[in-house]
Image (cartoon, rainbow, N blue to C red):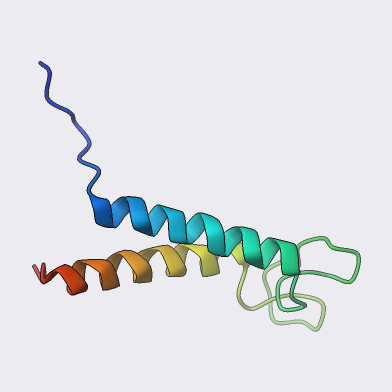
Length: 78
């Protein structure tokens, strides 16, 4: 009964840290790709006042990519 159900390895810890830091940096810089002039998030869409890449999607891709790259670096291909 003392076994952990969730195994958090070093790669996962680093990937979470990368997501948190990159999310913070993007949010603080407020690039026009994700934010309106007044600092609010743009809605998802293809119009001029919308963003084709929503903030949550970019952060998710950064997370999966960083975790996958860390796994490849360790030699765990499968």
